[in-house]
Image (cartoon, rainbow, N blue to C red):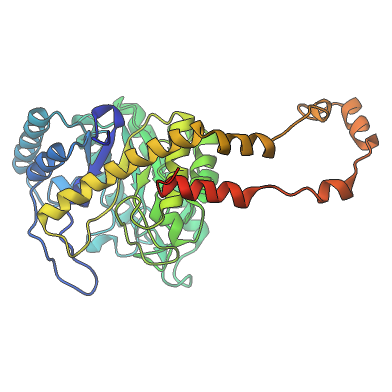
Length: 386
């Protein structure tokens, strides 16, 4: 029942299952896997697709001939396994040149190089069939505001995205751009730190219809926020172009745990939301196996991400079919229709009628809601006793 299928659209990045277990306090614990090995591992685990940063696939200093050979071999691996590339992105954070940012660097030569690198990476993504292009500004921020104006940084970031939108149009790539927010790490403060901030920024661009968001569970949880609410806001705005699934303890460093490994209720609400609204994009797992994992356990990590999503999808179906839960929801949302004349579009007559209406404020304030009972029923459902 919980085996992944192509229609589930589960994807992983080369950098996720390919993570070697390095952290700021420890050296790698796993041998690197080639992109070709990663493709075959993901196919064995049941994934639908694989995503990448440009330098996950092609070393930053590769020659043109080396690039062409790598791409040809990667295409063959995709063809052999049936995996696809739904999303691509650019690494604008690892190389020392981006130590002060990419699009928001104080150095105009770095900003120009970041544009060049991104255009080349867009060419690569288009060649491999990607339809979504993600921007995560890992170095777009500061440790001290003494050295950089946030107004200048916002202006430079806007100019870069406007430029790349025009390049997208000029080349006929038809990418949908998705901006990924994160509050901090690796910079002390990263500009546009939340999904809501990204949505506000998008409205200032020259081609806002082309640009949406790629919210990530861990990044919103780092800021102590409700991820499902951020996803709902993005969906309501028509801007949920991609999504990164993982897990995270609230308020910690970026942990990128296996999906559902830590916050199972939050994961349930998210899956329930995505399935109920009919989200058709990739379910991308931007997560890493524990540092304790060997390569066999890395494969179990990938399978676990997908399996948990499918289990929670089934739990969401049970929630909708549970008569007691649905009866409580009907009670909570009870509406006798008496207020209908006051809702909807404004009219002068409607406003005057509403101002004249007499409400029993005391009685309204005495009405409780059975949220404790409802939440307990949800817990019992998730624990498998309903």
